[in-house]
Image (cartoon, rainbow, N blue to C red):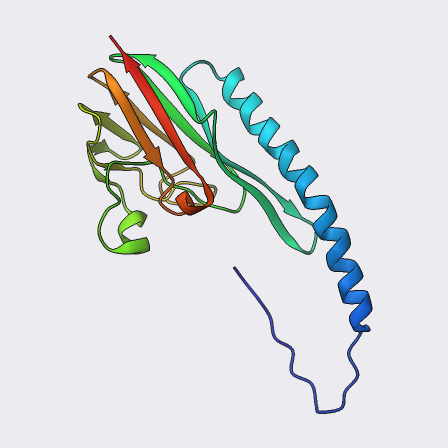
Length: 180
């Protein structure tokens, strides 16, 4: 998040009247839900086109001059795979990073999420041997040192729940069901 504060001498008129700021905000606010829905559909289509073991880890779009809009969701948020299969998550958001975090979140708050931890056996990959096992991708996304993808191989049946440690409070959660 970035902001700028302009300080002018006392009594300097604002560039626009308050009503103009309200109108601009209302117009932008009205267009954002439609853009978000379009991004959500795009993310789901990309994951489905990638095959049964692909998940989109967030989608977004830069908005000209005003910031960005993003969808804090794993798409699809449920996948079923067989023991031994690997699932790959791809962050398709040009500005907002995400994590793929299984089990409890690493200690240290946001700083604990930055680097891979738990069952991560090499950069960008984890091997999960039981539901509830801890694994954290570290921060993935465009321009991030770990890249835009993370994968996990599941070696035992069960239900594996995961979150984005940065956006779970916004509902960014998912489940992998692993069958024999």
